[in-house]
Image (cartoon, rainbow, N blue to C red):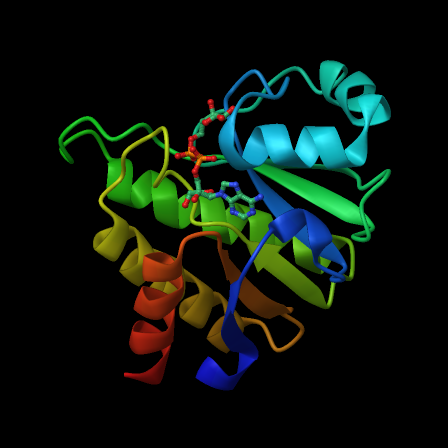
Length: 169
Ligand code: APR
Protein backbone atom coordinates (compact mmCIF):
# COMPACT_ATOMS: atom_id res chain seq x y z
CA UNK A 1 0.00 0.00 0.00
CA UNK A 2 2.98 2.32 0.54
CA UNK A 3 3.24 2.94 -3.21
CA UNK A 4 0.17 5.16 -2.81
CA UNK A 5 2.08 7.41 -0.44
CA UNK A 6 5.08 9.60 -1.16
CA UNK A 7 7.08 12.36 0.44
CA UNK A 8 7.65 15.72 -1.25
CA UNK A 9 9.96 18.54 -0.18
CA UNK A 10 8.56 22.02 -0.78
CA UNK A 11 5.66 24.44 -0.52
CA UNK A 12 2.21 22.82 -0.43
CA UNK A 13 0.56 25.84 -2.06
CA UNK A 14 2.39 25.07 -5.31
CA UNK A 15 1.26 21.46 -5.61
CA UNK A 16 -0.87 20.40 -8.56
CA UNK A 17 -3.05 17.87 -6.78
CA UNK A 18 -6.84 17.71 -6.49
CA UNK A 19 -6.78 18.84 -2.86
CA UNK A 20 -4.31 20.15 -0.34
CA UNK A 21 -4.86 19.90 3.38
CA UNK A 22 -4.49 22.93 5.63
CA UNK A 23 -3.28 22.67 9.25
CA UNK A 24 -5.82 25.17 10.55
CA UNK A 25 -7.04 26.27 13.97
CA UNK A 26 -10.58 25.77 15.23
CA UNK A 27 -11.79 29.18 14.07
CA UNK A 28 -10.79 28.42 10.45
CA UNK A 29 -10.05 32.07 9.80
CA UNK A 30 -6.37 31.83 8.90
CA UNK A 31 -3.22 32.13 10.99
CA UNK A 32 0.53 31.64 10.61
CA UNK A 33 2.56 28.71 9.28
CA UNK A 34 1.05 26.67 6.49
CA UNK A 35 -2.39 28.16 7.22
CA UNK A 36 -1.11 31.68 6.52
CA UNK A 37 0.68 30.52 3.35
CA UNK A 38 -2.49 28.84 2.04
CA UNK A 39 -4.70 31.85 2.75
CA UNK A 40 -2.19 34.20 1.08
CA UNK A 41 -1.92 32.00 -2.00
CA UNK A 42 -5.65 31.27 -2.30
CA UNK A 43 -6.76 34.89 -1.79
CA UNK A 44 -9.51 36.77 0.05
CA UNK A 45 -12.34 34.65 -1.33
CA UNK A 46 -11.09 31.75 0.77
CA UNK A 47 -11.52 33.75 3.97
CA UNK A 48 -15.07 34.64 2.91
CA UNK A 49 -15.98 30.98 2.45
CA UNK A 50 -14.27 30.06 5.74
CA UNK A 51 -16.29 32.68 7.60
CA UNK A 52 -19.42 30.72 6.74
CA UNK A 53 -18.13 27.38 8.02
CA UNK A 54 -18.70 27.96 11.74
CA UNK A 55 -15.28 26.71 12.82
CA UNK A 56 -14.17 23.11 13.28
CA UNK A 57 -13.27 20.87 16.22
CA UNK A 58 -9.83 19.32 16.72
CA UNK A 59 -9.60 16.04 14.83
CA UNK A 60 -12.23 17.08 12.29
CA UNK A 61 -12.04 18.56 8.79
CA UNK A 62 -14.03 20.87 6.49
CA UNK A 63 -13.63 21.50 2.77
CA UNK A 64 -13.58 24.66 0.64
CA UNK A 65 -12.71 25.56 -2.91
CA UNK A 66 -9.05 26.21 -3.75
CA UNK A 67 -9.55 29.66 -5.36
CA UNK A 68 -6.11 30.96 -6.46
CA UNK A 69 -4.36 27.66 -5.83
CA UNK A 70 -3.57 25.03 -8.43
CA UNK A 71 -5.52 22.59 -6.21
CA UNK A 72 -9.29 22.53 -6.75
CA UNK A 73 -10.05 21.98 -3.06
CA UNK A 74 -8.62 22.82 0.35
CA UNK A 75 -9.41 20.49 3.23
CA UNK A 76 -9.02 22.35 6.51
CA UNK A 77 -8.17 20.04 9.37
CA UNK A 78 -7.64 21.10 12.97
CA UNK A 79 -4.78 19.28 14.64
CA UNK A 80 -4.51 18.83 18.39
CA UNK A 81 -2.33 21.16 20.43
CA UNK A 82 0.33 19.01 22.14
CA UNK A 83 -0.22 19.14 25.89
CA UNK A 84 2.05 16.32 27.05
CA UNK A 85 0.32 13.44 25.25
CA UNK A 86 -2.34 12.43 27.78
CA UNK A 87 -5.14 14.49 26.30
CA UNK A 88 -6.03 12.25 23.35
CA UNK A 89 -3.55 14.08 21.14
CA UNK A 90 -2.59 10.91 19.24
CA UNK A 91 -6.20 9.88 18.57
CA UNK A 92 -7.08 13.40 17.45
CA UNK A 93 -4.13 13.58 15.08
CA UNK A 94 -5.07 10.23 13.47
CA UNK A 95 -8.64 11.51 13.21
CA UNK A 96 -7.41 14.58 11.26
CA UNK A 97 -5.99 12.32 8.57
CA UNK A 98 -9.06 10.03 8.51
CA UNK A 99 -11.59 12.87 8.40
CA UNK A 100 -9.68 14.59 5.58
CA UNK A 101 -9.60 11.32 3.63
CA UNK A 102 -13.34 10.83 4.24
CA UNK A 103 -13.90 14.16 2.46
CA UNK A 104 -11.65 13.00 -0.38
CA UNK A 105 -13.96 10.01 -0.95
CA UNK A 106 -17.03 12.22 -0.80
CA UNK A 107 -15.61 14.66 -3.38
CA UNK A 108 -13.97 11.99 -5.62
CA UNK A 109 -10.53 13.46 -4.92
CA UNK A 110 -7.84 11.23 -6.38
CA UNK A 111 -4.69 12.98 -5.21
CA UNK A 112 -4.29 14.81 -1.90
CA UNK A 113 -1.32 16.42 -0.16
CA UNK A 114 -0.95 16.79 3.60
CA UNK A 115 1.42 19.06 5.52
CA UNK A 116 2.90 17.78 8.81
CA UNK A 117 -0.23 18.61 10.82
CA UNK A 118 0.28 19.84 14.42
CA UNK A 119 4.09 19.69 14.29
CA UNK A 120 4.73 23.44 14.05
CA UNK A 121 3.00 25.93 16.35
CA UNK A 122 1.03 23.06 17.96
CA UNK A 123 4.30 21.29 18.98
CA UNK A 124 3.31 17.66 18.41
CA UNK A 125 6.53 15.54 18.52
CA UNK A 126 7.55 15.16 14.89
CA UNK A 127 8.62 11.51 14.71
CA UNK A 128 5.46 10.29 16.45
CA UNK A 129 3.30 12.58 14.30
CA UNK A 130 4.80 11.13 11.11
CA UNK A 131 4.24 7.55 12.32
CA UNK A 132 0.61 8.34 13.15
CA UNK A 133 0.08 10.07 9.79
CA UNK A 134 1.48 7.17 7.77
CA UNK A 135 -0.37 4.54 9.80
CA UNK A 136 -3.73 6.33 9.60
CA UNK A 137 -3.30 6.77 5.82
CA UNK A 138 -2.20 3.13 5.36
CA UNK A 139 -5.26 1.88 7.21
CA UNK A 140 -7.58 4.12 5.24
CA UNK A 141 -6.09 3.09 1.88
CA UNK A 142 -6.41 -0.58 2.87
CA UNK A 143 -10.09 -0.16 3.78
CA UNK A 144 -11.15 1.96 0.81
CA UNK A 145 -9.99 1.03 -2.72
CA UNK A 146 -11.10 4.47 -3.96
CA UNK A 147 -8.89 6.28 -1.44
CA UNK A 148 -6.66 8.94 -3.05
CA UNK A 149 -2.93 8.92 -3.60
CA UNK A 150 -1.29 10.73 -0.73
CA UNK A 151 1.64 13.13 -0.75
CA UNK A 152 3.23 14.10 2.55
CA UNK A 153 4.42 17.61 1.81
CA UNK A 154 7.39 18.54 3.99
CA UNK A 155 8.57 22.13 4.25
CA UNK A 156 11.66 21.23 6.26
CA UNK A 157 14.43 18.94 5.05
CA UNK A 158 14.47 16.92 8.28
CA UNK A 159 10.75 16.17 7.89
CA UNK A 160 11.26 15.11 4.27
CA UNK A 161 14.06 12.74 5.30
CA UNK A 162 11.92 11.41 8.15
CA UNK A 163 9.01 10.59 5.81
CA UNK A 164 11.32 9.04 3.22
CA UNK A 165 12.79 6.80 5.90
CA UNK A 166 9.44 5.82 7.43
CA UNK A 167 7.85 5.18 4.03
CA UNK A 168 10.69 2.86 3.02
CA UNK A 169 10.47 0.74 6.19
N1 APR B 1 3.99 24.18 2.78
C1 APR B 1 4.06 23.02 3.45
N2 APR B 1 4.28 22.94 4.79
C2 APR B 1 4.45 24.11 5.45
C3 APR B 1 4.38 25.38 4.82
C4 APR B 1 4.13 25.38 3.42
N3 APR B 1 4.04 26.52 2.72
N4 APR B 1 4.58 26.33 5.77
C5 APR B 1 4.79 25.69 6.94
N5 APR B 1 4.72 24.36 6.76
C6 APR B 1 4.89 23.26 7.73
C7 APR B 1 5.74 23.48 8.94
O1 APR B 1 7.11 23.29 8.61
C8 APR B 1 5.23 22.38 9.87
O2 APR B 1 5.95 21.19 9.64
O3 APR B 1 3.61 22.95 8.26
C9 APR B 1 3.79 22.15 9.42
C10 APR B 1 2.73 22.52 10.44
O4 APR B 1 3.09 23.70 11.12
P1 APR B 1 2.03 24.86 11.45
O5 APR B 1 1.68 25.59 10.20
O6 APR B 1 2.60 25.65 12.57
O7 APR B 1 0.69 24.05 11.91
P2 APR B 1 0.28 23.40 13.32
O8 APR B 1 1.44 22.96 14.13
O9 APR B 1 -0.78 22.39 12.98
O10 APR B 1 -0.38 24.60 14.10
C11 APR B 1 -1.60 25.13 13.67
O11 APR B 1 -0.73 27.33 13.50
O12 APR B 1 -0.68 29.07 12.07
C12 APR B 1 -1.40 28.47 12.95
O13 APR B 1 -3.64 28.91 12.20
C13 APR B 1 -2.72 27.91 12.51
O14 APR B 1 -3.34 28.16 14.75
C14 APR B 1 -3.02 27.20 13.77
C15 APR B 1 -1.70 26.55 14.15
